[in-house]
Length: 518
Image 1 (cartoon, rainbow, N blue to C red):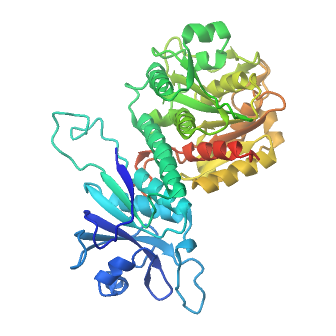
Image 2 (image 1 turned 90 degrees about the horizontal axis):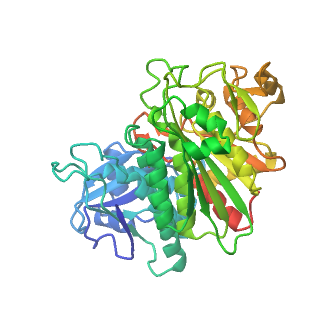
Image 3 (image 1 turned 135 degrees about the vertical axis):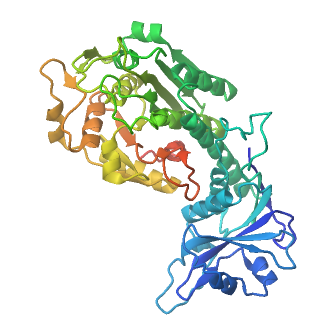
């Protein structure tokens, strides 16, 4: 686990493997950001010019490494791009202050730098700090950027007999922060809680399905719940059958690994509101009888990313001690083809009592979520938010880095969007056109699990809405795009599981505890 400290030490005198400074893209060339003054002085005030000579511009995500001059105890200076100088006027005045840089700019820069320093033992981050929020953003970005999943590699840290490989950055010192300032200390404590649980969600998403079936996932959740004072209940196949959870059972019917429904209950004595978070937890999705085509199965271990996000967020909320009650529901199943699998044309009787004609067994996520939505609604929470890698259609609409937000209340949808932006997660509000509901009419059952092909992400949300209790505010986050990064790492986002949704759910709980549910 990467360690993090706040330091008042001068950059010139701190012993570390590297010093990280920020550089912005000015109208006339790279501009050093606040925090880099002592380092620039060691370069006789010529660091910006030297960076420009090396081809650096200060663009976002850009990294430049320079050997340190005499006067710095750290042997390496890493300049990380912050993007365009905020609000730089046309007259070319590139004057910049720490307050000019948003939390997300700082978070991204810190993550980029931490990734670039893989193998280093200690790095000092001398990035712009205007307030406690900036301290938290730098800490969060650096901790997320220092993530690695190597449990299954020969060089993995968990393998006692393995040869040594490059480990993530081991220690982070945030310069310019105030170790004794209550707000700064609280910002770091929050960053540690959120990033540690988010990285746990990443680990779960990255774990291969032969080691993470529904029972194993439930065991991980149970252990964490007990550790952090969260009440946990696990429904196995017998309990699910007795309870009439036809959706979860139908999806898991083809697998040798039985399904589970896990309930995590965090309560606070001063709470006035209750949030219910529901996560899709398909630990592996073959598509079932409606088998996915070649090339679409390889990353389907990530189809439980919604449940991982819900699990991580509930634990983070508990660690932060927020004055809000949060119930997490993990709808866990493995979707496999076999002689016992649900077939296209079968009808399932859901927990709510409604019947669903299964036209496509690869539209399984909405079936497990439907049962969890109906069950969660019985507790009449103030709001329900479900999180799921639900549809490829949402990826077509929004790309690989943005999740969609559907809701049965426009104000709540707007509030979730605002919350995601505050947390630094890319999201976009999506409509729920009523005319698309008719496409799910079934001559055999109350509703079919498929509708019109066009607008498939919207159709899926309309299906889920059918199982939300009357009068309950609800939102659906389709994280199919950003949950798993198949491309190169960027910012604080690694290759593989990303932990998408965790920061939004935690921030929503914070806002709710503060009386701003929306």
